[in-house]
Length: 210
Image 1 (cartoon, rainbow, N blue to C red):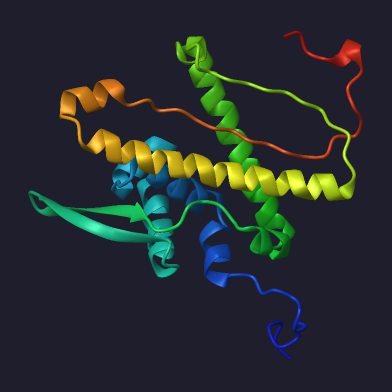
Image 2 (cartoon, rainbow, N blue to C red):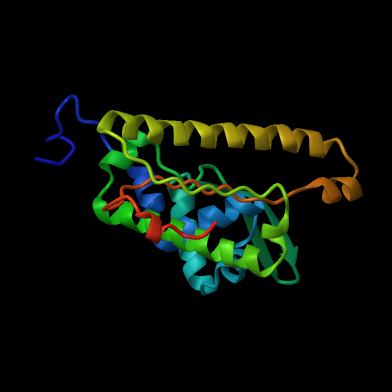
């Protein structure tokens, strides 16, 4: 009997294509880079994520088969052709799939996300990114029951969707500007939201200085 045949009627199935697309750290990073840059070639991606071109090329082909990325154009340079891809899905998993993907895939996704966050925070701190007065940070240990924990998790997802909607509106307004003004008024920012259990609430002596 196959695993699919053994599922109960009320047990949601995992999106196999999505699981395969996100089932390897390199594919996760390719999707993240394409989301960031809108479109890129394997050689550009390889340079951005510091991976061998052969690895990126292989995983890009897997992502195409998974319908996670698509070819948008090709540029001929001498005797070679460079292909450019864009992401069709974001490197995120909805709640139903998140609950049902294998533990190792879920842990890999979280690990990759945390590594990217720390890397970007370090880069911002080394430059002027954290000096901008619009920069916001919050650290809030909370004591919740199961119902409140689940509700807050849902709210985090909704807030992320609202942020993406803001981006769409911003892109439309920026598209109406000339190139010089568009570049001047474009702000590249990162929104990091993390919600996770901790073993205990920090005591006042353990709280970081503000």
